[in-house]
Length: 201
Image (cartoon, rainbow, N blue to C red; front, top):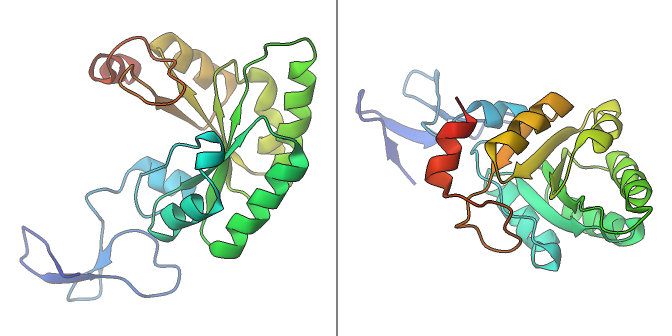
């Protein structure tokens, strides 16, 4: 693919230098940042701020690895599966990519003792070869410390501005805002076009 920068009219090709990261290299060998470069790219060490949804078994190793290999951040579906299954899926994903990827964990506490099981699961995942844990459907507060101790990022998907603010207060590294247009498990109750501006104020 050949890219042309609209202001300088130069032929820009994606950098092939090892560890080049985001952006492209112009005719004078100086880095030109991609217009898709955002702080999330720096946080997750990816080229594009694009994540796939970690939808249960549908978001398997092949999908997560493909997204990461294309420059996004692949998210492996973990749900609340036993650690043995999650570890095997992480190992399979790692065999398909050397790029960063994460694991999705649903933190809905529906039965007594769920909080303990989830803390143990997240602590165990935190020791494995993943860059981040992506949480969904609950309060992230009890689940932030273990990943951070292992230098893993914590993201959470939320459905309201109030949840986003509470998640930031809990210490998450990034918030994913979900409107009611989303598929799968839907936590959002308003349109993303209303919720997003309210969240980033």
